Image 1 (cartoon, rainbow, N blue to C red):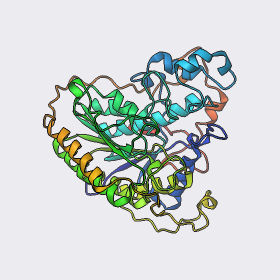
Image 2: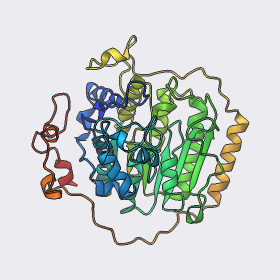
Image 3: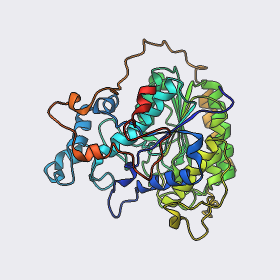
Image 4: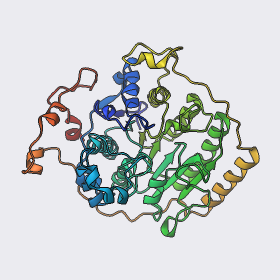
Length: 432
């Protein structure tokens, strides 16, 4: 490992343009805001910035059922009235609406996580960041919790091609149920989720007793928390558990989901974490010096999401950011104080010392039951599902590239890609 980490950062300027609907809490616009903060702080000069490829249906079908992927390709706001049964079957509706460019949105955020995993596999970077990713609720055959394609599962599957054991860590306020479910029966992936747990809180799973089954028994770890947990309690608990997990499991790569809805003041959250507290978890994981894939996730007070992920980009770069936010295209969103940090909240902390002690003891007991660093019989590495030299015409002779698609290949004025120009935006795919 070099003294200075090589960091790859993935961003597509179109990912923030999609619109879930006027009353929907998910606002992909937060990704544009995050990116402009990253630019305004000059962090792009310290990383390699890439526009990810749009994941192909065959790549998405490495986890998701092909009929579900095909349905996402086909459905549009104008045609959804024709597919009432399929909408129910695949759980599209109020939480997971059909909107313009839905499938392309999925391709962009999933492509970013796949490209990030690919670069880590080929050791062309030490840390890879895709803030557009982290949609951890999507299941094999259905959408769930604002998530359509589970990019995290796809990224972990890619990492498993070159790494015997992958550790998945989730600090979103919601349980990482889709990722846990995907790897519930294997010891090749250990999932650790810190989340609010309660019957009335989505998704209603994530009890400390959910530990995995068959070969995966004891390889799912859940840390169920109550309202109001603060920086001190959360980070101490996080460090204690994750340090022991790494010691026992000896992962070869880590995937960290940094859902920002665990911050104080989130529209859908109920924790008291400040940005410093949230970012401390990133700092702890970074110190293990293992190949690290970092994604976004939830986060519904968009100016705080942008603050958090920009600050955590700085943490990953070992760069301290001034608290005063520099001028940028979205500066008005950060008023009236225009500061980067947000303090912790004031919700009553219902996590008593005895409760946290009990949870910690349960988790440690389960960890004692695992086989120390399970041995894995590595198979021959399967071929890549990358098609960098194919164009759309070759892939599907019945479809030609629309002008709309061609327009999106041109670099936008408000983006920055290191060493990029209008004609080589897929440079990174050839490099890796």
